[in-house]
Image 1 (spheres, rainbow, N blue to C red):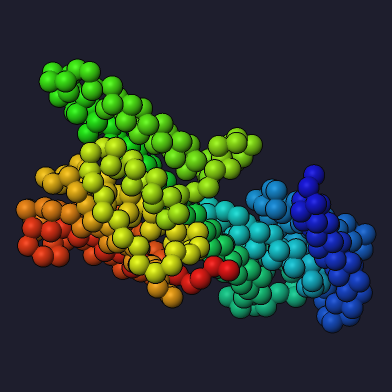
Image 2 (image 1 turned 180 degrees about the vertical axis):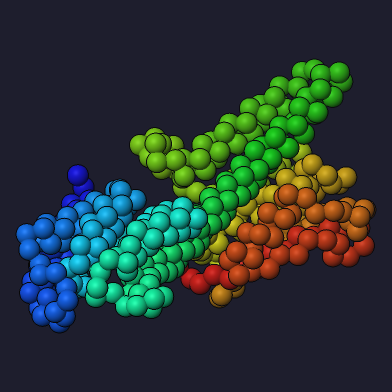
Amino acid sequence: MTSGNRRAAAAEVGLAAGLIALGLVTLPFVDRLRTDDRTPDLLAVALVVVAAGVTVARRRWPVPTLVVATAAVSAYLVIGYPYGPVLAAVAVSVHSVARRLRLVPAAVACAVALLVLVLHVFTNPAALDGAAGLIPASAWVAIPFTVGVARRMVQEAVARERAESERRLVDAERLRLAQEVHDVVGHGLAAIRMQADIALHLQKTKPGQAHVALEAISRASSDALAELRTTLAAISPAQAGDPDSRAPMPGLARVEELRRRVEDAGVTVDLAVHGPPRALPAAADLAAYRILQESLTNVVKHSPHPMATVEIAYRADAVTVTVANQDLAAGDHVEGFGIAGMRRRASHLGGTLTAGPARPGIFEVRATLPCATVR
C-alpha cells in the first residue's frame, strides 16, 4: 500500500470513528429533547455503530455502504429512537455515491435510500405530521447528493482539461519531431537525389567521373544519418548513454558544414555574415539553422538556377537569416509543409518569417528571430 493509500484509509477510519463517537455521545442529550421518543438502549447503540462504522468502506463500495447505513438508520427511526447525528451516516454515504457514480445510477440509488428513510414517518411519534415529515429526511439526502454531484462534475471537468492539455502537449511534440525529421531527412534526400542525377548523367558521358558524385552521395547520407541520430537521441532517454547523443544540436556555428553539403549537391552558396557571430539561445540557434537548412533544401529541389545567396545578420537583440535564389515562377508558389514549418518555428520564438518574391524573378525567405546575447 502506498503512502497516499495509507493516508486515505486512515482518513476513512477517522471519519467513521468520529461519526460513531458523535452518535453515541449525543444519544443521552437528544433523548431529553422529547418525551415521546423511545429511550435509547443497547439496540440503539448497535444501530448507531453499524450506520456510522460502515462508512469506512464508502470509497471502495459506495452503494453497499449506502444500503447498510440507510437500513440501520431507518430501523433506528422506525423503532422510535430520537432524531440525532445518526443521520449524518446517511448523508456521508449519499455524498460518496454521488461522487463516484454516474448521475442516473447515483440518483436512483439515493432515491431508493430516501424512500426507505421516510418509512419512519408512519411509525415514529416524533416525526412531523403529513408532508412536513418528509422534509428532514429529504434534506439529509438531497443536500449531500447535490454537493457530491457538483464535486464530481468539477473533478471531471478538471480531468478533461488535464487530458486536453496533455493531448495538446503530445500533439505539439509530435509536430516538433515531424518538423525536425522533415528538415533533416528532406535536406539529405534532396542532396542525394541531385548527386544521383549527376551520377547517372556522368555514367553515360564521363564514366570515370561518376565516382565523384557517388562520394558526395555517401557524404550526404552519412551527414543526414548522423544529424537524424542526434535529433532522435535528444528526445529518447534510452539513448542517453550513446556517444552520438552527446553531439551538439545543429546551430549557426555549423553553417559552413551546411554550405559544403549544399554545394556538394550542386548548388553554389554565396554566404555573407554581418556583425560578429555570437552564441545564441539554444532554441533560436536551432530554429535559425533549420530555417536556413530548409530554405537551401528548397533551392536544391526547386530552383532552376543552382545558386543561392545567404545572409546572416547578427544584431543586438535578434538574428536575421535571409536566403534568396532565382525563381521565375516565384509568385505562383503554394506554401507546403516546409515553409509552414519554418513560419511556425519563427512565430514560436516571437519572430517573423516571410517567404515569397522579393523582386521579379527572385524568391526570398527572410526570418528574424529575437534573441538576447548568451554570456
